[in-house]
Structure formats: C-alpha cells, structure tokens
Amino acid sequence: MATATSIKLDDELKGRVQHLAEARRRTSHWIMREAIAQYVEREEKREAFKQDALRAWEDYQRTGLHLTLEEADAWLAKLEAGEDAELPKCHV
Figure 1 (tube, rainbow, N blue to C red):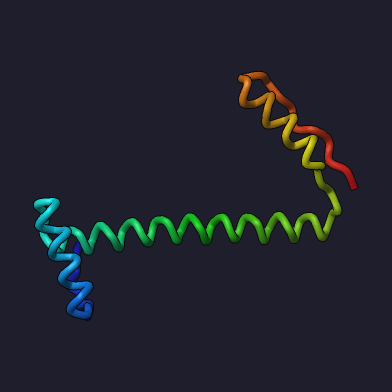
Figure 2: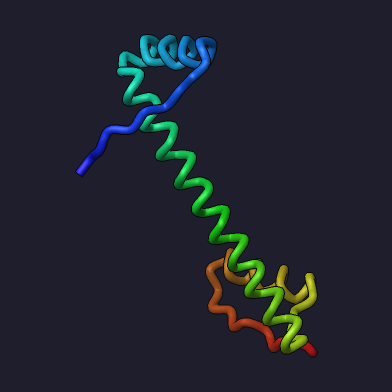
C-alpha cells in the first residue's frame, strides 16, 4: 500500500526534476520515486558491503586466518577460467 508523503525541494531542484520529467515523458512524481528507489537500493547494498567487511575484519582479528593477495588472485583466475577451484588454505 502506498502512502502519501511530502518533500520540500528548492526551486532549482524542482525545476530540474520537472525538466527531466518532460524530457523523459514521465511525471515529476515518477522521477522522484525512481530516484529515491535507486538511492535506497544503492545505499542498502553499500551498507551490506560495509557490514560484511566489518564481520570479515572481526573474524580476521579473532582467528588471524587470511590469504595473500597472490593466493586470492590465483584462485579468482581459476574461477574466471571456469575451472573448479577450491579455496586455498588460510594462513595464520
């Protein structure tokens, strides 16, 4: 269910949105909804990446396990080539 909300835009930004809407043959409402949806999706992905990185850092600090850059690159190259590549053993 969609609920109405309001947003205050300065005149310049409002004009830019209207101009873009006209050029795209869309409504200003559609342009703003699309912009917000894309922004939220991008920021959710960014936040998930950040949380993954923090968990990985915490795991490394707890265990000390890691791969060298060369080992990771070699593994990724095998995957890219379509080979079955088992993840190398981690170092302490």
